Length: 295
Image (cartoon, rainbow, N blue to C red):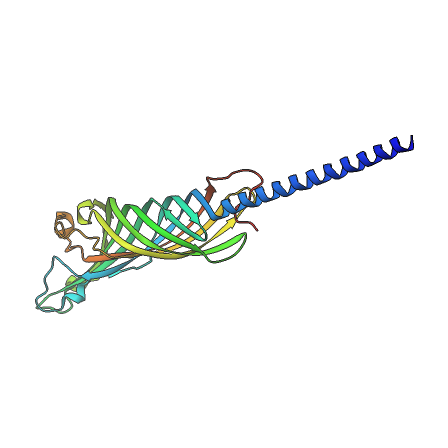
């Protein structure tokens, strides 16, 4: 009887030890499997997202042009004065990106609404009476819609939930639509008076005055905030440096309405500063146990 009881106790102890060892090995295997999945998620990942925001433009004049050719004063005295970064535009982007070990290759097709303006000042003085003169000021606002196709490389600097990055790339832009809003104001000093006047703003379609395509370089910074549910909140700041002329040289004098007020488009490059806010979603390994980059 004692031998039977002792044998039963030994079998029970052996079974208990075997069960615990099996559980330990299973737990270790699952942990290693989880860690392997996390590594795959962290090292390689496709991201899909959207972002939108505001932008401001700066004009870099290459060559100046005017319908009027002065004979007794310099052309620079009637040159256009550009209001750089003065008007806000807007943009919306779709982002498709591939992440690999800190680097991210991103394609971001964008609809960009661009605005900038300039003024021109003219004076006419009578050769007989110095005080008999007229002053005219033309204000012109350009509104251009572009389809922009940037190819960007990003690099994550550091961080866990909050991950800043730097970015650089190249872009090509296609003109979709362009309009110009023109208003005139002035003062007439004829006959010793001082009569101020202002005309109503007119809108003119000017698609042909702008080049169909232009290209440039870009750079910027940004930051991602990683949520537990794999979603990233993204703040992006980008500066586009125009490298080609946005003006159509063939159609510079093509608008009769604008030529009538002495306007001709300068040759120019266009810089653009944009700020966008968006969301990114991972496309691989979306199990609830996996986290994004939240360590």
